[in-house]
Length: 256
Image (cartoon, rainbow, N blue to C red; front, side, top):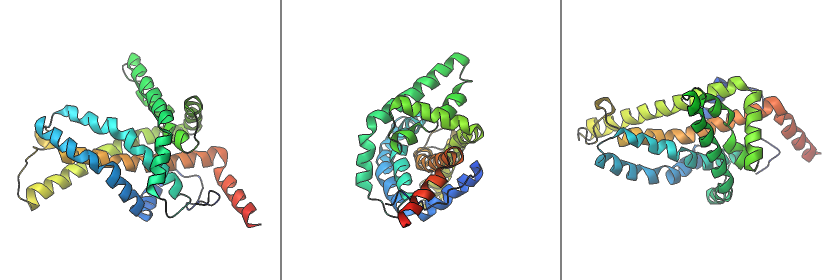
């Protein structure tokens, strides 16, 4: 891995252009991302399917992918950060590095949870502000190895420097979650009901049940959101800190 040369052209982009970049980046790096998804997402699918069966698709099941989200996202954030500078990244050393930062990550997630809980004072009107302000807490912990205090401060500074981007990202977070959930439901129901001719063994979303297909889609949205948020973080740093110039000058210095 060469930290002085980035595989992605570093320049200011809008949130929608960053989304397009995230799709192209994921397509180019699909193999390591797919392998990591097999490790991080599949282990949760079967337990959630069993829970959906026994709970008869109760809506409380929707909490599971939301609570598991930060745990799934963290390794993808670190993997994506390393894939920016290398075509091949060993998975297990990367997972170990993620675990090494677990105390800082947990503290950052706790700070986010407390901020969201305190927004209840305003009937949760302040929840979007809390989400936007602590948008990059995972990136600061894993990529900058910042402690909790500095990580919160860095996230606040980066989000405040590009407030419009943070606002779009906050909406995109839930948009991606909803889109993946609906696609998962549609693909699962089509496969089980139409191709395998098994009917609706878990019920359906339109019947008021939370199905394993819906939950799987929600789980798969977590890696997508992690990669998109990572590239937004890179974009904000490029805009506000001249990260493109820093990387370019370091690379030029090595060539001399």
